[in-house]
Each structure stands twice: as C-alpha cells, then as structure tokens.
Amino acid sequence: MKLTSYPFISFEGIDGSGKSSLIQCLYDKLIQLGHSVWLTAEPTSNQFGKLIQEWILYSETPLTPQEQILLFTMDRLQHSSMIRSFLDRGYIVLTDRYFDSTTAYQGINEEDCLLIQHLQRDLFSDRIPFLTFLLDIDPEISLERIQRGKDQFEQVAFLTEVRKRYQKIALENPDRVIILDSRQPLEILEKKMWENLLEKGLFMV
Ligand code: TYD
Image (cartoon, rainbow, N blue to C red; front, top):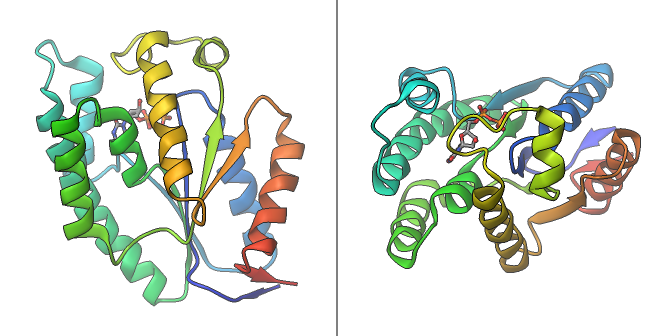
C-alpha cells in the first residue's frame, strides 16, 4: 500500500468515545504494512502537557476558559513542531486529539471561540490534519463506558455541549472531518475508517 498524500490524521471525540482503541488499530495495521508511524496525543507529556494533566487531575482553583485555551495552545505549539518534524522524515502521524479539541471543549462563548479561531489561524494553518475522524457518541453511553465522570470535563451536561460543538466543526469542514458513529463495534468502525482513508486518497492499494 502506497502513501499518496500528506499523512497527518487526527482523532477526536468526547471522553470515552473510543478514539484510543481505533487509533491503536490503525497504528498496528500501518506498522504491519511496513510504514513508519508516530502515534501521539494531546495533552502531551511535554512541559505544558504535564501542567495540564496536573491541573485536570488536582486543581482546586479551576482555570478560566481563556487560561485553558492558552495552556492547550502552548502544548500544541510544541507538539505541532514535533509533528512537522516527523512528517518531514516520512512518518505517518496519528494524533489522539488536536486543535478541534480546544474548539469543542473550550469554545464555550463567542469571545472564546474568536480567540481560538484567531490562534488556530495564526499558529496552525500550515499544520492542519489531512483527515480527522470524529467518533460521535451520546455522553451517557461514553461515561458509562469509562466508568469515570470524576474530572471537570467528564460530566454529561458539559459533554453534551462538547458533542454539539464537534458536530458543528464536522459540518463546517466536510472535506476534512469524517463522523463515525461510535456505538458500533470496533471492527465496523475500523472498516469504515479504512473505506474513508482509501476514498480520500490517503492510501492507494
Ligand atoms: P485525556 O486525559 O487524554 O482524555 P482522553 O483519553 O479522553 O483524551 O485528555 C484530558 C482532557 O483534556 C479531555 O477531557 C479533553 C481535554 N482537552 C481539552 O479540554 N482541550 C484540548 O484542547 C485538549 C487537547 C484536551
């Protein structure tokens, strides 16, 4: 199987949507086919990613949405340089979350959306994923799956809004974002993902 385009793919969805399992399937298959693949995620494990993880897990004083936007963006700036360097070296890059996560999770009001759009346009317009798989699912089901619901992002009401913002992103970016109905079994999701990868011309058999 040959690579035909810019091989940068992101996976998005609310917590418990099954992104990690699907991305792992794709990673395993691509490695099996002999490709060089970098599997990565946001928040990262770099300095800013660690700060984010600490804040999500332990914070007693919540950050404002704008502080969150800036922190996730700092993490992404470092991350996107690494992504660029892997792409330049011929790797396929698969990322579990990228800038759509900030739009979906932090784009709560018009002011915050404008800040996010502005940052994305200025900082990441040359590092847009070729394809984004959005795993769409009802938060009631996803939270049941992960049996969590502890941190501030894992609440049904909040995730219902996040889900709506993801659906809006998909509507606005029909060429890039593919919605997969995440209630389906992993084998079906994997099959549909491959149909899209081939159809969009990312791989040629
Ligand atoms: P993580 O613990 O990796 O959760 P998951 O396995 O569901 O991806 O991510 C931590 C949380 O960070 C997750 O609830 C989504 C949130 N997040 C944002 O709010 N904004 C962002 O820009 C990113 C990348 C993540």
